[in-house]
Image (cartoon, rainbow, N blue to C red; front, side, top):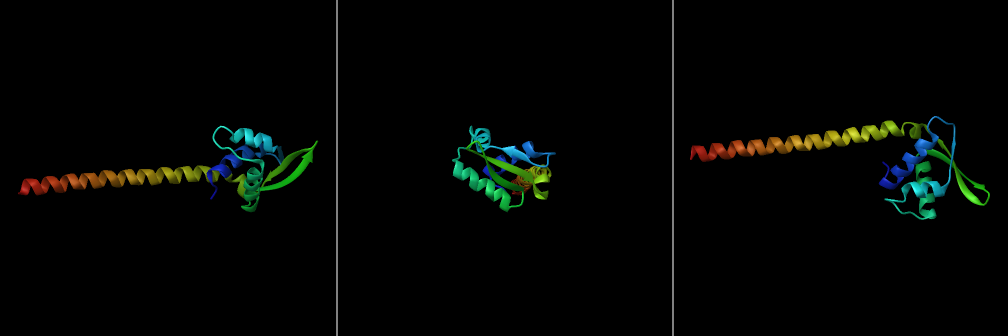
Length: 122
């Protein structure tokens, strides 16, 4: 499962590479995309991108373009299914929250009924 930073990076890469064989993404683009909420150094970004490659989401080659690093990214099978996986995680979270709310309502109802029964019986 991806952590928050890796998920944000994967969101951006998925949008750039969706429907294409490969996409060029600069570290600066990624850092600018993450910047308001997540601050990373270039080394940390490289580590996260390599983790995505190790987790079989992407295939990445680091290339040099006029002295600047560029990621040549192509989505692997797991990367192409990323959007579906993301939707499934969201549905699972909503089911979990719904289940917890239902349990809280049932518990409160049972407590109310038992309390009223005991006080009315005495």
